[in-house]
Image 1: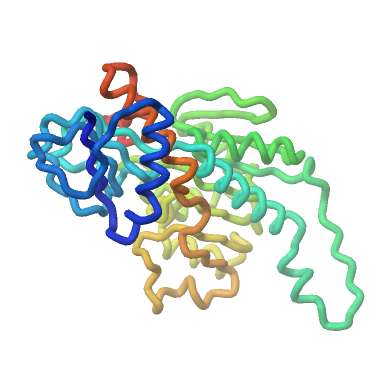
Image 2: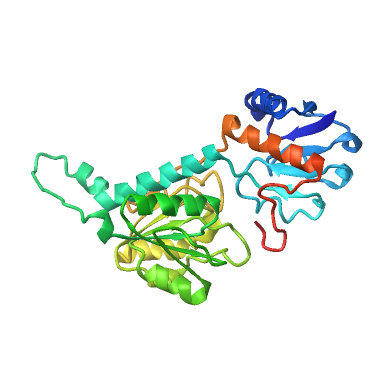
Length: 309
């Protein structure tokens, strides 16, 4: 019997318990799944980084800590966490992110905000360029970034991507390193941020980085709020260096009511909905990784502690 501890908000338990149980059964695993197990008996911890388990030291027998979130910056630095840590990568999460990014990229490319504002009885044709004439840059080419870059390329955009390590994606110009970052920013009429939040990427999009963008660029950030220096973005919006920013993640969440992003006409705020972890598509990933951990096989999406993701 494999003892699996579910450590997330109490409200999450009803929506997760049956998909997890079904996925474990489909994988042929005999599992005792619950929210309360004696630490000495736990084999696997399935957790949200903000869940009730914050001290992992008592769970030394656990062979896996499986995060329910794609981002692990809230847990990877926990010094009590010495067990193998896996981040969540699942088909539903990826599909949701691709749809969000493609939808907002097309929205800005087609100038839909201006079109909707123009519904005042005046016939004013606003013809956008073709996608092939629009430069889109994706920063971060992990599982989510690569999928988004590939979809944007399939839509016909001229896509560049940047990552810490070299990548190859069909139809995408991929660059790495400091020089590569400057090059991709210069062609980013639409800039999509999907980098993990690490010591190296915190505040990466500052006044210097924004200064490399072509005038009137648009930013779409469904990645991590800490990637952006808020004051520098607001300044760039005021000067017109950045035309609009669609932001889904923020340094403080929920975004405080007094934050200037809420009232700024050049900012669209969405409440961290770009892509959620859906139990029905994520539970099979948990089951697969549980089976792998118990069999001593390689764990999917294992976090590199040194890199932070």
